[in-house]
Length: 73
Image 1 (cartoon, one colour):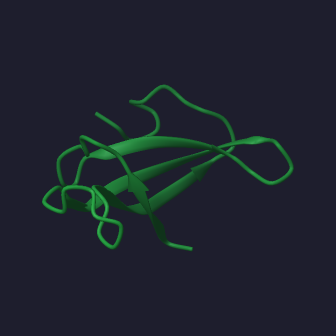
Image 2 (image 1 turned 135 degrees about the vertical axis):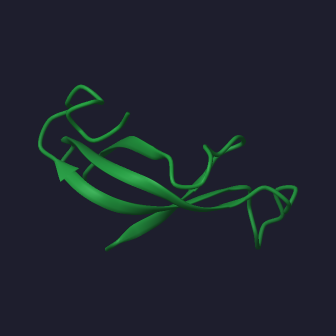
């Protein structure tokens, strides 16, 4: 999987790097560095086009790192 859609009220600007965390099926926390590839701000939250952002996964991390070391400036 190369990316994901994330529902959020105020997506970051395009091309901004974000550090995402999620819980995998076994209950362990996972971390991924991602880039905001596109945003949807105009839908007013309709069910077929919710407000949010599409992210491209850049790097899966085994532990969270300081943002500078993870490539976020």
